[in-house]
Structures are given as structure tokens and as C-alpha cells.
View 1: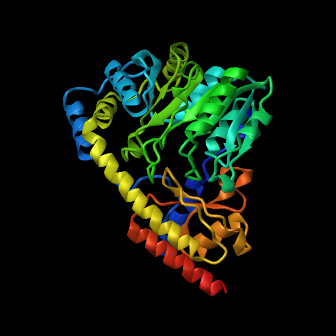
View 2: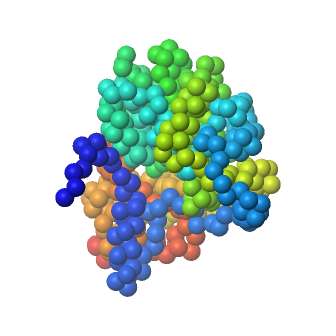
Length: 391
């Protein structure tokens, strides 16, 4: 057998894709499964974006482009960030990548050395911890608290900061909880970042999916933070473009140059015709469609939260952003993994164990409501019936 590099043992994975494989295997055996495990909008990409890509192909945008992204696409990102968050960036401070994950990978590779400490939310997107370990840095989990609507205590953050702290990762709105950091939270994090001179990686991939009057706030609005923040966002969630694989990062120009160099060494560039479609996606012409998506997500959220709170042993906070619910299932007497297996094999509903997002996820599971109301209603009916049979 071919030798495997030691570093590969430090890489984690996304359990959502593993559960999807198990669910597909059950479907191949003839069992009906409702998929609430994958964080993928079920909407089609808006037609104006598709049309822009088709035209770009006809217009010859089928060749290599600059590693950092086409200048006009980078400027479109800068304009969009100013319009949605008020922070001014130049095109030279933007890098466009095939999906948003490369911003995590390249950005962290650019600034983190072996032995550096990185504070990250737990429960949180599992790739954070995976990359910290891969880079031989020290992962420092920061607990999100149910009683704080899945925000963390600033005191808990401050207690974890040491002279070795190189980066703090924040994600708002959050995966898997749907929690949102307030403007006051972000201001206090900014004060700590300036005081202790650490970098913030701000994952804002769900920035435009908020409810109940909540508006996304970015940490880059505070003094001294644009200079020490890598802001990550992309097209997948807001515009239903998961399969297009396109994301971007906003960061100081000298870091952008390094990230672009890493991209040169890895993927060369992002597909040119995709970037033309991205320009269309970021235009105000797409705003109404994106707003429709959010309104539908809110309707689905209300359906699934109501249904989960009616189940024995389950309580579910109503999230303020993203498209996930993160119910507490301790009252069922099952562990998180036992509940997820029960849901899949007994009810035919695919969800994720809370422990897929870190050790602090025990006692919780995650359902994605990026699926139709009809499918959500069916999933909750199946789960209720499975509970009734369980007794």
C-alpha cells in the first residue's frame, strides 16, 4: 500500500457528507429518506445569474484569469461589501476562490505558524478545527451557550487569550446553531483584538440570511479591525449557487497577495465565466430574489421549530439567522449520535449529531431547513410517529 503522509491524519471531515452517503444507501434499498442533513438551499439559482453565465460562455470567458480573480469581479465584491456592510475595500484587497473553503485554508496558511493558538467556536463548522490541527497549531475551543441563544461569553473568550493567540475565528450567523453575534459582542471582540494584537477570521457566509428584524453586523466596522480581519463570504448560501463553487475573501492587501499566490499553486484561478455570473449575483438586480429566499427560509424555520418543540424531550430555540435549527434532545434520554441514528433508521429523516460540530455539541442535533415546507412537515410527522412507537 502506498505511504500516506502523517499530516493527513490531522485532517477532519464534514459529517454531513458521510450521513448523506448512508442516507443514499438506504434509498438504494428502497427506503424513503427526507434530507435535512445538508446545508444546501433547494432553490434553483436565479435565472438572471444563469443567463449571465451562458452569455459569458458565448462571449469567450473560457480561459485562465488572474489568480486573485478578474479585476471587474473583485471590484464587484468590493462594491457589494460596501453596500451590505459599509466597509470600503479596494479590488486589490479581494481574492475570489473556487468556493469559500479555500479562503479558510489559504487565509489560515498565510498567517498561522506551528504552535500558534487559534480560538474557534464550539460547536462550530468542523473544518475550523480540522485546519487548525492540519497546520499544527493549537485548537482552543470557545463554547457557545444555549442560554445566550448560542452566543459565547466575552469573558470566556478573554480567559482563553494568551501571548500565543494568533487568531480568533467568529461565525455570524452561525452554523450549526443559527445564533447571531450582536454589535455589542463584536465591538468587545474588536477591543480584545486590538489590545492583544490577534487576527480575526470572520466567517460571514450566512450574512444575508437573517430574520425577525436582525441585520447582519460585521466586525470590520470597528476601528483597527479591517487591518486585522480576514472576512470570508461567498455565493452558495445567499444565491443558491452551491454547485458553482465560488467564494471570496476580503483582507489586507499584503495578505491578499499571499492568498493569491497559494491559489496559483493550487487551483490557478476561479473559472472566468463563473465570475461573470458572480458579478450579476452581487448586483441589485438579484436583491429581490434573495429576499424571497430569506422569506421562505423564515416560513420553514417557524414550521420546524414549532414541530420540534411539540416533541417529547425536545426543546428548540428559534434561530435568528442561517437555515439550521439546533434542538436540545437531552430530555429524550438519547445521546446526540443515538438520536441522529434513530432519526435516520427509524424515522427516515437524515440529520446530524451535535457532536459533528465539536465536543460541546453533545445533547444537540442539527436539522437543516433548506428544504421545502412539505418535506419538513413530512419529516416532523415521521419523527413524531417514531417517538410514539418508541414509547
